[in-house]
Amino acid sequence: MLATAEKTADDESREFQRGTPNSVLHIDDVHKSFSGLHALSDVDLEVLEGETHAIIGPNGAGKSTLLNVCVGRLKPDRGAVVFDGEVLTGKQPHEINQLGVARVFQTPEVFPDLTVLENIMVPALSKRDGHFRVNPFKDFEREASLRDEAVATAESVGLQAQLTAQASSMSRGDKRRLELAMGLIQHPRLLLLDEPTAGMARHDTNATIDLLKKIKEGGMTKVIIEHDMHVVFSLADRISVLAGGRIIAQGTPDEVKNDPKVKEAYLGEEQV
Image (tube, rainbow, N blue to C red):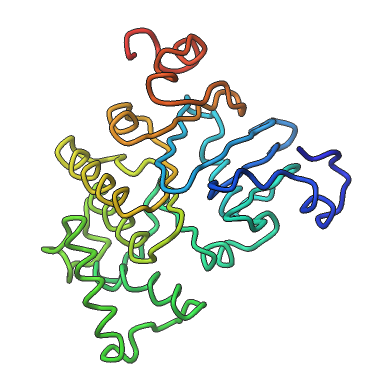
């Protein structure tokens, strides 16, 4: 834990806990407030190598805020985030991405005027080159091998029939799958997914579950924020429950499902 909020960044980097040897992500004593409102308080969370770790909780619990802290969109008032032994706190989002952390957003963030194929290629080019180019397809032939990988990635999420379609013409569910493909092609060490099945029909949700299970077999570590308990209990190795900006329970799906605090704060007796 951090001793005081007044310590310098160097002091903090020496004092916080870096997690156990097999942890990929360690969140240590993270606090974040907005105009006096505590969005996150005393958050401690550890994600282990190769696991799928779900974060659940009611609306306003602080789940997306926590992901924003992890990827550098927000700086915590106190505490630190460590990825693979390296401090992320204070780094810019593009620096964190280059280290091997990719995020799929709750609201799809795609390039509406680009095709599906081009959308998938952009983050791969950016990850490879270390920067985003205004016209990443200027020398398209040079990117032939990457194009082939983008096609394969599109096929893996069921978008092979829409390669030349503009992203602006896609349904919300298909945009969710497109953004998942944009995350996967980066080959991240850690993939953060914020409501990955939001807006999907049940058959598309089940297909996404199957895809994420295959990704797990490949060893990719994932953190998933999700309201659909069918998705959570189908995928999660461990679950952390946020309520009022605090972690109120952590454990296996069975442990969390049967925790009285979770039933009261979030799941409800009828859902467990």
